[in-house]
Length: 331
Image (tube, rainbow, N blue to C red; front, side):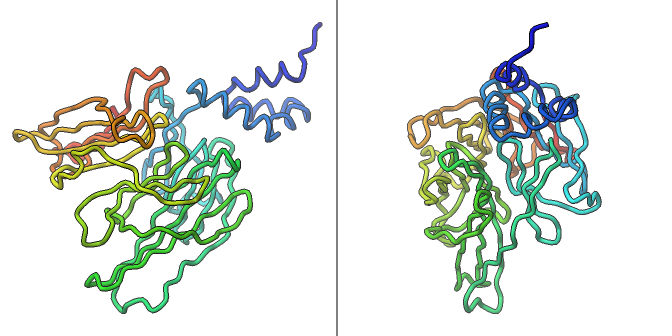
């Protein structure tokens, strides 16, 4: 009987799901070492990204529980077991990339968690302090998580802002965590004001993005990006219609592209337009993907948010919020 070579075996294994690979680790010590090898892990990830397979959507089921939903068959779901084995502890997702989740528990501990393998790593604690803050102020924390292919490193960005009660004090501090070095370090150059109280950075073209104002007094919205390779901030140009203050904007990353949803009133209805930036950094490459009208959605809310393309790219999964029963839906 012919025996498969090592390369042929890996070529077959890379096509399997993570669930199957975890089972096959029990076949032998050799298979276990192959599947745990960093080279094979990158090989499996590369194949999954290339073929749009092994994709899941993580949704919160209740305060303490998350579900993993298959992108292409929403009937296939599984309940995730929280890291640290604490099923009654609330956790917040800070970002996701390549199957890894950056999360924070209610005690302020931050972790990198792989729900598929159930492995996790607790990050070293980090404090961001401000000199001479005012007596009355608001403090907000913003995060983003992504992968830098140049340095082969996963990075978590954490930005803390302090705003005085009467806008007389405004200060920001930012730090970036490197999984490769397992160390936090301060980064400079963030001089913007976040639009919303809680906002996660979205990854496109190896850059994390947030919607910001240039100053607390400004009404002009801007999209700022943090390049994970150079670790520098820069502005990304939005379509011209974004200067209209009556349009609600929501930015996401979908299919590797920046995705912008604009929601506005038109003739008594709410209209939601979805835009995609086809060529990163080129303002003229923003194109409208689709437009929808919903007469009974909540005014002023993010009525329609695209989440993902289907495997073959001919369908889009949306999150919709309805007015009558305050219900969230995936369509």
